[in-house]
Structure formats: C-alpha cells, structure tokens
Length: 451
Image (cartoon, rainbow, N blue to C red; front, side, top):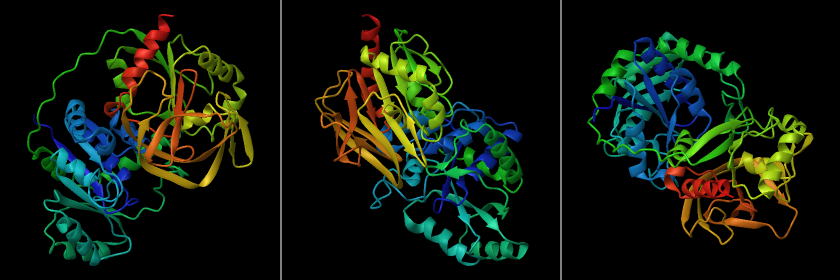
C-alpha cells in the first residue's frame, strides 16, 4: 500500500518540533495536499496543535501501550490523506528506559519504514552542528535520517557557517528557520496549553505555522515523503451494532482523550455523546460515563460551582452505572482539589482529596488486575502511562484498588485504580487498542442499560 509519509524528529525536546511540524503541514496544505498528522508517544497536548493546523484529528503511535503490530495497523488504517506526517517525541533515540531505542521515534520510524527529517536547534552552535547531525546519523544502523532542518539561526553568517559544516555530513538541508523571539506557545506545568482549553491558541498556532512554512523546502519534503516503500494493507473491521450509549466529559477542563479510544468504543457498539462538567446542568441519557484527563485544577472554581453536575455524577455512580475515569477524571471524583491558594470542592465519590505538588510523576506503567476490578475483567497485565503533578491523600483505610503496578508510581504504594460501586478511576492512562478495558466497559454499559 502506497502511503506518502515523513517523520519529524528532534535532537532533544524543546528544539521546535511541534511548531515546525505544523509549518510543514501548512505548507503542504497550501500546495493542495491533505495531511494526516500522527504523534509518537502518549502525549495528549501536542496532537491538538497538529489537528488545529491540518483540520484532521491527530493520532498517537505509542509502541509501549499499543505494541509494534498495532502501531503499524493504526498508522496504515488512518493514513487516508495525501500525506501522513509523524511528529516525534523527545530526542530521536529516546525510548522506554534509556537502555535501548524501544518505543522511541526511531522505533516508530522503523515500524512505519518512514524517511526522517532531523530538527537541529542551532542557536548555540555553528560548525559543531555538523558533528551533532553526523552523530545522530551514525548512532544506529540505518538511521533513516534523510535531511535536516536548522532552527533558530541568528544571522546570514551563522547560516553560512552551518551550511558549510553540514556539507561534510552529506545530509540535505530542508529548512533554515531564523530566530524569532516573539514566536512562543503558552505552557504550564504539564507542557503546552491544549488548544481546546483556550480557543485563541487556534489562531496563534495557525499564524506561527504560516510564518515558518516559508523557510522550509516543502517540495523536497514531498519527494522524500513519496519515496518510502509500500506498507501492508490492513483488513477492514466493521463496527458492531449500537447497543448502548456512553457520555464523555469534554470541555476546557477534560479533553485528554485518544481519538482511537473513542473509535474503539464506537466499534464495540457504543454511541458516544458529550457533556461538560464545567457548564452543563445535565448529562445526556446514557448507560456509562467516561471522564478523561485534563486540567480540573485550573478550572477548579468553575467545576466547584456546578453542584448539579457533581451530584448527578455521584448519584449515577451510586446507582451502579459504569464510570471510567483517568487522571484529571480521578481528581474530579475525589472530595476536593487544592491548587495554588484555592481548595475546590469536587464530586466526593472517593474518600480522598487531591493536592497539587511541584514534582512531576512521568512514567510508563504496567499493572496487573487485582480482585477489585469492575467491568468483569479477568486477570491480565495492562500497559499505560502516568503524567501528573498531583497526589491523593486517602482519608479512608478501606480504599480499594484495581491495579498492582510493577512499573509506575500510581496513587499509593504502587497501587492505582480506585474502585467503588461500578466505577474505576486511575492515574494511569490507557490506550484501548492494547487493553481489554474498552470491551468490558462497553459490555458493562450494555448490562446496565438492560436493568
């Protein structure tokens, strides 16, 4: 199957991958190409920027959570546009544990057999930038690196020094982007601010993409994208007949969802409806609730004011409705969230309070299911990731956990997944393609609908 595609990789984090990827997407669209964006790793925020500029929902490719076969199938299945562009994560070879390139951008480039463009931050180097490029090109056998983009060039002389040095490496220069001080995206404790949370960011990222695209050799990138080998076809999977309805919290406070997770629920027979814990006073008729991650602490005052919604969520849980929540959703279901100088009252489903800390908990996770798991799941290992600054103070010694973690921190003592009634809330984010949660959650919702 012919799929024009390219990977944008960085030497490290913070070299400008996201801005440059959006610039390439803009340049491709200006030439009449439709673009399907992908993001390596478990990130929820960067994909929102890629989606904004491309007009297509960005997909994640994470080898740890999905496995290599599912990464390839997911990529092929969703590459319906003229060109697919994959933004990397961290440094090109940075993977799962630092001991190998497993789950790195390099790993995904090999799985998808894609040509790679390496982004180099040249702000503090000149001739030495060539040594960096040469090192990356030679570090692993068949690096797949086919060109470089120089970012943050200070002057024409600086550009000439870098160009002359790179002639010895033999990698073509596909873009030279000057240092522009006023091009900076807003960020906070978990990274960039999601586009959905602040609509003004939509216009800003599009403006940045447009301004940077003129410094990039789009035609050369198109040729590289089209020169990749064919990939195997993926058999079509028909969705099951709709048998249940799941309400998903989606607003400026909760918006960390993998599009593949929503698609999985639909494929398994669930109709998806959305509601806002911030502004709605009712939840659409449903048989289950899914509350994803986000920034409930930032919108804590608005969530606190919506007493009607908090009482509804708690009542549905007490009635036995299946509820699945991750990270921000977990925080929302505790008694309160303490953030900066405020303390905001939340749903109170779990006898715990959420406290924001200064230390980031960022890990891939692996968990075995304990005996307290809802949704009728059988014992199995589930892989995911955790990414949060908050901690839970458990007020009861009787808290029940669904997960025993072999990798990761979790809520307490390497345990995660608070459970009560037919609800599960964890710090662990899960990609449904690599776990049994979606199928069993949908089955549980179907059973609830028949009561």
